[in-house]
Image (cartoon, rainbow over the protein chains, first blue to last red):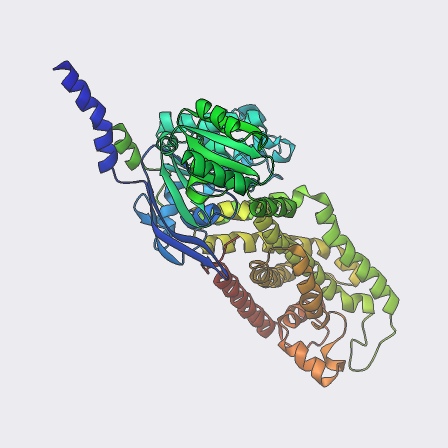
Length: 340
Length: 275
């Protein structure tokens, strides 16, 4: 009896998750800029109180998707809804449901922390003493209660981010959208922010959608959508995604020609290989034994070896056949940063 | 179950923020920001003041003619035009803040808030209008030096004219600034369009003595009616081109058209990036 009860209890969360209406629903979303397709038919759901990550290199379409979800832009085709409100049809209703934290700063640095939140409250119809109370509450929540009367331009980058977050959360939204929220933050501030997002999910049951291009951030999400060149290439929990990789990941640095080495390894060991620059990548169970065999089989051909547990990046490589950071999107990043 | 009740939880606050509260808050922000930047406050007053003194004294009585303001010193003739210039400068700088808001990201957070676009236009335009009108009215302190002595009713009427001109120019500035993402492009518009608008408003030279084609342009220029209305009020004894009521009616129409234009610009939603 006892075991049966626990089995049902275990199954129960699965059942509710499946039957619960999604908080965010993206259906076959397409977006074309003048000469470029940014989104090429993307679909996924975000469940209640879920920390959902949108991972992709720059130019993969995450920011386009973010703009459409936050009602700043109309999609070319397809549908996006948040809490049942269509982003294209009912922007006003949808806007009430969401809190938005942009990648670029949106706080007015010429105003104090308190003034920023006071204006923000008014935009959401909050006023008077309830607003005042809420501002104090949210400021102490992000640890800035004692800096309320200071101009935001005197704040550090991490503190300005926390004010951004306070702005997004002031009106108690059920859904929080964040676009690369940790850009420009030091590792400590980055960790704090993620901890806070997890607290929000756990204690206030806010559904969080966050875009990122950082693997270690993606690992912290409940579920992940991985994007590449406007397509959704993977969807699932980080553990599920990584489990599709058989065993460990072996990277061999070729002394001469990586293509040739890969060909010879394939012929000899009957494994699948991927070539990344001068490296040959192999997914393999029992990698330690395999590595010894390879080195013995091709003396002098291999300059370096690494063996690791599969990470989210490996899922990306497996699905797209190329590295997460390519020269092309690196150049884009540099360009974007210089523009700022 | 917990997750389900949560998904239904409603955000804090009423269903809609309405128009007035967001408009008020954007208006107030505009004013606070302006007066925190002391150099801006001084700048918009000082340069027209220098213009007025140098040009006014420089021309002196040089261009007296039968058709023109024969009985006036140029300093007096130039006074209403200087006031309008102050209003123009303040309006322009106020609307430049719209481009800064876009660049600094503040505008984005307003645009994702449940705020009607009309509230954004109203708040920003009224903010710029207030600043421009206040700066313009401050310049009235110098009126005695231009040989002007005003009664209370006149001051109030001047205030109405200054308000209308401010509102119209700020509305125009909003419509121009809305699609722009850099202030340098806006500077181009100022030199190419807004300054000529002022030059051809009767601020520097009277309609009556101008060449026919210039006069035609001046008739089409809404600012002309602002300058003329002020001239009517400040120098009641001197003959002007338009009677006060018709000049004010023209200004009112101009203001409404400019506000409508600003609203149309802000109300577009498109498949292009909003910011």
